Image 1 (cartoon, rainbow, N blue to C red):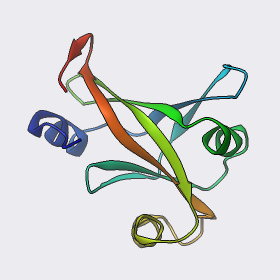
Image 2 (image 1 turned 180 degrees about the vertical axis):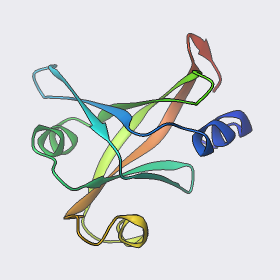
Image 3 (image 1 turned 90 degrees about the vertical axis):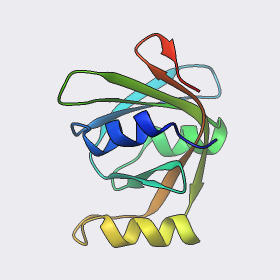
Image 4 (image 1 turned 60 degrees about the horizontal axis):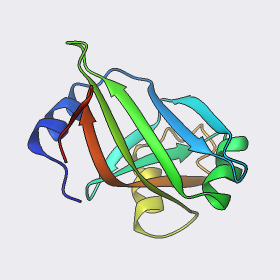
Length: 123
């Protein structure tokens, strides 16, 4: 999906950390704060610097959610399919902006399928 212009602008004004939620095979949610994030080709990239349950969940169950807030306190949710890579263009991009002193073992990629601002569906 191509992210709406409003969401792209809000992303540039986001406060860090963002919130990433994954789901286990058993349906148990796991939520973490993530500081090493970026957009790449309308996908959200999250650097795997310390994933544990998150890594397992992304591999086993491909659904996820990213929540972020702007300085103006507008909340946005990006929902979709998660994948995990240790190579390729998304991984290479992550290595460019992830701090070199962090692990950067892989990258979780959220391919956005739905976008919300609060309860309002944007796409």
